[in-house]
Length: 95
Length: 154
Image 1 (cartoon, rainbow over the protein chains, first blue to last red):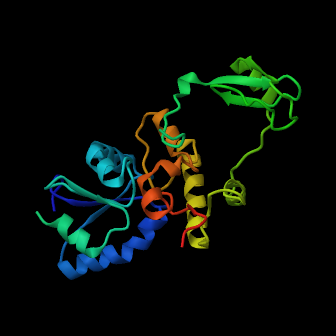
Image 2 (cartoon, rainbow over the protein chains, first blue to last red; image 1 turned 90 degrees about the vertical axis):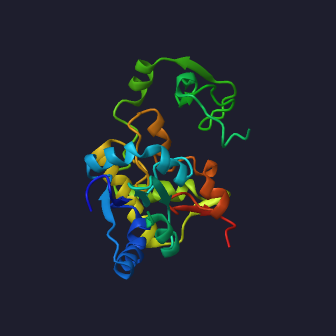
Image 3 (cartoon, helix red, strand yellow; image 1 turned 180 degrees about the vertical axis):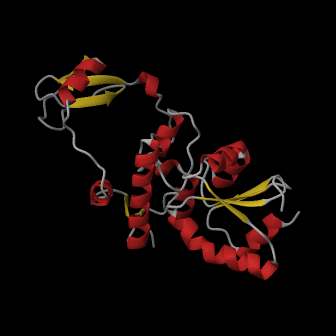
C-alpha cells in the first residue's frame, strides 16, 4: 500500500494498551487480508510528525488529545482511538 | 465550571516563599497555611533567581522505576478518589515509558499520548496528568493509560 493510501496504526513502544491490542490487530489483518502499517511515535520523529499532521481528526477520535493506540485511514480520513474491537477496525478500514 | 475542567494559565503563576521555613510555592496565589510549618499567611512573593538559590542542588530526583512508582503510590494514596491500578504489568510498563520520555524528551510525559510540540500545552501530558477532566475518566473510571482508576470502580 503506497504512502497517502495507508491504514495506519499509531502506537507507542511503552504504551501498555498498544501492547495488549497487538494480538487483536494481528488477527484482524490475517483474518481480513488487510495490511495495517504500525508507526511508533515516541521513538521516531517522522512518525510523530505524521501523527501530528492528522492531529485534528485523531484528537477528536481520542477525546481531545493525540492518544495511542489510534488508527488513521489515509483514504477516508477517518480515525478511531483506544482499545478498539475487530468490528470497529472493520468499519474503519472500509473505503 | 468545576476546578477540574478549568484552565489555569501558566502566565498567571508566580513564585512565593514562606518567610518562616522557606517552603516554595508556584501558583497564582500561595497557600494560606504553610504545609510544612503551619505559618498562617506566611508566603511572600519572590523572583525566579531567589527560588533557584533556595533549591540549589537539593530537591532529589525521580529517575528510577522505584522512584516513579513511589510517587504514583503517594499520589493515589488513601483518602483520594483515585488509586494506582492493581495491574503490575500496566504500572511497571508505564513507569518504563515515562522514564524513556524523561530521557529522550525531558519530561515524564504520558507514553500513551503524543506531545503537540507546544511546550506549555505539553505540560498537560506530564504524568500524572489532569485525568479527571478526561472523557475516558467519566466513561470508564480510569485515566487514558489505565494507570489511575477510580477507587470505587467495580
